Length: 617
Image (cartoon, rainbow, N blue to C red; front, side, top):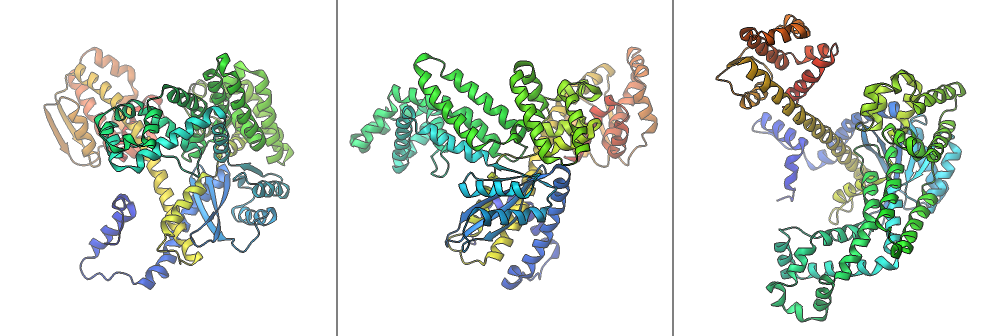
């Protein structure tokens, strides 16, 4: 056995490889060791280069974020990797071996400058790195070299340091130490661990990780979630009959788990940390741009913490927590990009505008600072400023549009500007470059996981170029598949909702028209129509041949008044025929459907749902 994991079967590349092998038939000669590591690897690297072209189109349209981070491998080599993030996803450019270099600000700035030039100076909006002193100095140097560029510290790293400082407070230090002691004790003893899993329904506790302090608060959350199960465990026969119950360590853990004071302090820890962890999860993800959400989420987190510690005896603790949060955030994340992105987030900005004039002025100032730096052309800058006034005051046709106002909270800011900002084209182009940005360099850490998967303890003598090529192929293809799956899940969720809505409406129509026989002409949607028939009560179902011509039936659809009259007169034969033909159109003529649906919003709703259902079946 080669030790290939079972989840390899879930990979699309695995399916393609098996299918191609089966099509070849017997007598296939597999590639040699040399062919795999030289010509075939070079070929797949060139194929992966084609993926970059789609990303480059997104970089040109939305701008992008250059991310960088360092890592030391098992042989002591210090590697620095470079990735680019945009709404299209995260793309791994390359890694370099910097073991022989002094990692000062000039060296790091030179490396980043080379990658910026490779991508295109006009495409890179910001550079995101960790908050180390050398990277901070390199970021300032880059901003001097490129007048339109921003350096932004990693928000995830800042929040992790913030949580670490909160955990060091005297009120939280003791319960955190106790929680570590409980989890360590349980997981060191197999029989006790087995008994715990039995009480928790087979679920494990979250165990803290040294590199991420936020995980200790997740451990506290996990302990609190299974509090009753743990108490039951330490009062059950599994514990009292165990030798561990008579040891000093066992007695200590027993006292901790059954202590009300411990659980009360755990709840205090969670009240202080969970609002920040919510922000951390948003900035740590890369499925949707986080920049327009971060400032609002941080404000909301502080409000929740204030509400949780509103009593007089918690006043001192609250002041200490807020001092840590504001000190870290103001000192490390002092960049106007967050304020400008919130200003351009209509779902949040218009609500703030009604409540806090002073904060609105601050956001407007951040927007002006970013505009002055990023747009050098004075004429274009003035146009954007004029259009931003219309946006801020909700004047002009587009910003008073009822659809724009209705969807500003449900759509993410990038989609909103794409959908409704076209009449203020200069502001739209500028806004898309701001609200599409990420807020952390977490993609670099995910990339190190790919390095560790390839550069293992037994496989640690790979040349750096070959290691770089293997990671380049594996990471970029994995990220492409991941983003496709994300889109597919969103489409399926939309389809499910539309499907349920459609079934309800169709059932009502069928009951009123007394339709008993359904004839379906389909060359694409047999499976879909079987599902449709399954949800409805037809006596006879027949599937027939090719695509039906739809022009006359489409004209019938547009005659809504005539159709309503037809329903009122209960002309069942005509109605039944109309119903059958409409279903034929929706299933068999999906591409003509897309042309037609642009002409009427009513037809658009139904046709889009069935088009996607047919396409994704």
